Amino acid sequence: MSRRPQFRHTREELLHRMELRQARRRHLTPDQIKALALAHLTNVDAIARGRADAGVMWDLAEAALQWSLVADALRQQHPDNADLEEAAAGMRAHLETALGVVKRWSATGRIVFRGPELTQARQAIDWMDALAEAVDQGTAIACALECARMLEPLKRQHQAPAAQRPALAEAA
Image (cartoon, rainbow, N blue to C red; front, side, top):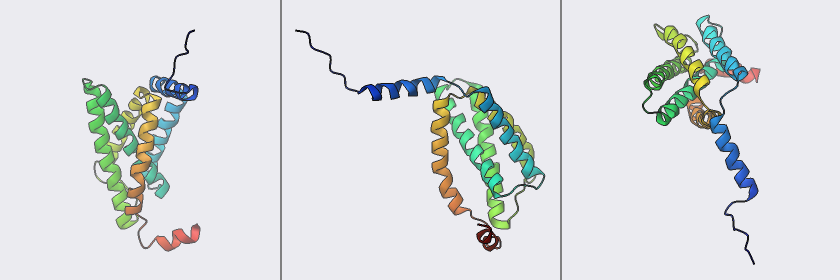
């Protein structure tokens, strides 16, 4: 009499684990990469032209944080890749730029780049686009979730300037 093997995982758990492994290997689709590139360009352009609102500013900060996390994750996965080290450094600089824009808005109500920040933000677009082509879906999803968790305290810390709060409350 033969015994059936005892599995430690249910069928659903095994399928879920397979999906996660496949997601780690799958990359973003060309349409996703194009949409991200357009969003990055649009946000930087809106701030450069003085047409950005708080939503665009937070989108810029979120993208800077998320792609900084992606660069660090890819660098850990491929520690000998000098390009990823350079991308991580570029994204750290962009994160500092984005945080500078957020702090400036919180203090003054203005959403602007100062000095070399616009040049840095434009360079970061290239890094973000290159990272979008290199990252697998699993890493991208994990970084997006971590980014959302990290961004909430930042949003609470840097709220609209006091002069704008009554107008924002009326608009809501």
